[in-house]
Image 1: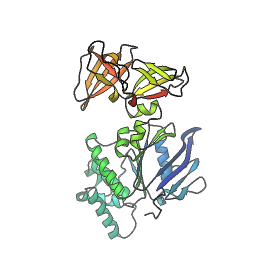
Image 2 (image 1 turned 90 degrees about the vertical axis):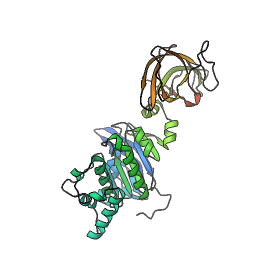
Image 3 (image 1 turned 135 degrees about the horizontal axis):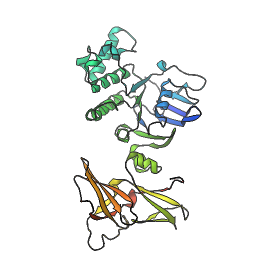
Length: 366
């Protein structure tokens, strides 16, 4: 294990770039991951996540940039430590177990030392993942979840300082996935391993990561703790990547944007600027006090907007209700805890808390 001090990142990548056929797939990506930290590289398919992982692993060569492990340079465009000497473990969606080898031999693959030492390490790891009884079995005798745990034990066996994980849970049944994610994370943290997890699933990133690096078009566009990335999005696309999003279009006049929900502050934006006011369905409030002309405006929520129910569906833990605003026919979505299924055509009044809204300058090309 490393003898680096507490302030040295276990893994650091600086300004990595990789192009294919003249197109930048990874464009100036930098990251730092401390021992025991889980960082998630999150983004849509094709944004450069897996290519970044392959460069760190050493199976893909960067065009420029540097990679450090515990402060030591392991790869730039001149020198390159081979993959097998980087002390980096790999886990992929395909568990890649050897079908002709026993569970014990799969886990021991790549270990050095005496037969007794290797057997002891195998027994220790299989015990930790709850598979001691299958030590002399074969992969085809195991379920998908059990095979994933064998793959984890094999990846951990050489005591890697860094674990790279590329969509490792996507092939598992939904019922098993959360439990195996949590179990895997617990073991990796016990080993003080720095983890870089690649996924396109926001839920997985939020559940597992200490830090999220949101990637788009080959670049990291935002990075931070899951709470901060979720609640302080950089732009409209960042909001929409994590969940459905409602959007109001408006034009700035006197640092204010007028909408069916009243005025929104748009400080620093010149008159005539077109803006997108974005908020999540769970923050659209339904006001059931419909006396007279609807609820009175409040400082926190602005003006109430009249809307008509277009569709309502029960989703399990919550209900999704879709509305059409009277003002401009805009479609709005609201999520409501438990069962709430108003009839189509029901008139309701909606408000939006200002502290739950994001005001972004509209894209020039919509």
